[in-house]
Image 1 (cartoon, rainbow, N blue to C red):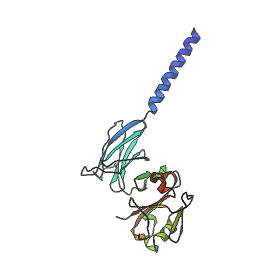
Image 2 (image 1 turned 120 degrees about the vertical axis):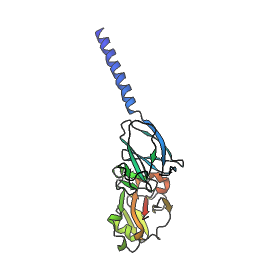
Image 3 (image 1 turned 30 degrees about the vertical axis):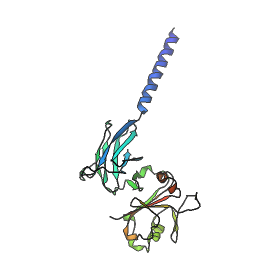
Length: 230
């Protein structure tokens, strides 16, 4: 009788612990809108959790929906042109962001914040990069010392091979007969970067592997993201 009682107690504790663990791991759905200072909806704003890209972006109405872990500490809305706002997650499931509302706000993140890489459609945390993503910005370049954009990439951007005007990202195997990477300039795909002057360049980021997967098959040979000075 005592043994039966002990077994029942142990099983009860196991069931309670399992239920508790499942509830602890269950993700929370958070949604809201992102607007600018004039309350105009912003499309393509990246939603970042604890400094890590979630691959969730706002739609044309500025709306986003994301599933996060209950122990998430911060949520950030970030746009390369408008900057971002980071807020502490306190359990609320409706969170709206208003970018550029107060640039003196300690929660405000400026557009060129060094914590993030620009990858065309949004931002990704440097600490999240898992495939040796390379980036170089204006502070690390003497833009006027290069004869053209290819010379600049050859001299300053790690992880690429440049011969003439042909660029190949190292570690990428061609899947379609071509080794040419995809080019994104200020968020727009372009097929040639020959007309870009080194003096115009603010930053260059090289993406491959999981970081370029957001571009689908077009990014199979890697992606080179160029941000020009405003």
